[in-house]
Image (cartoon, rainbow, N blue to C red; front, side):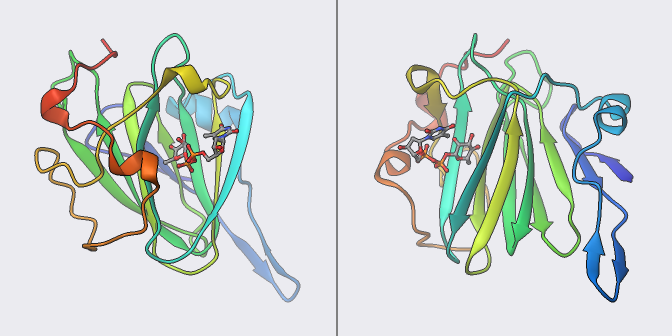
Length: 181
Ligand SMILES: Cc1cn([C@H]2C[C@H](O)[C@@H](COP(=O)(O)OP(=O)(O)O[C@H]3O[C@@H](C)C(=O)[C@@H](O)[C@H]3O)O2)c(=O)[nH]c1=O
């Protein structure tokens, strides 16, 4: 497993060894031991799956404490631009983001610690996005930021993605009071 620590402390990318043979391919999509040793810790309690067409953008989302979630995200089919934004008030990289392409052929995965907003945009039709979470869905604790917030300055490479009604009206960073220390 190749392990890459990104510029925002705690954000870790895992790229597994993929074993191809005439039948197809095999790789380890989760290993508690490897993840924990790298610092991707979490009591994983929920797995989610979403499918998206090309140009669909979901995010930027988080759950507020005490229901904050770390996430381990990957793509089973297709490709996405995945973005995480540091919302930890005391972090030297507060407000900064990291952008990673997740690709079902490379099978790379991203660990998103608590204290981050997360979003992605599908680059291919029928993109299947899978992720583990360290807390259960808590609709009353949902929070988010606007995907095209000028302060965050995320270059998604698209002007008019397909965004949910809920995501279209998420707050701007300038009006935002982070719930994460
Ligand atoms: C996230 C979630 C949604 N739902 C329901 C609520 C709603 O009716 C429907 C669709 O929900 P959403 O529009 O919030 O789905 P979506 O926009 O895909 O939300 C996800 O976006 C990505 C970027 C994340 O990081 C995730 O944590 C999650 O927030 O599914 C659950 O039942 N459980 C869940 O854990």
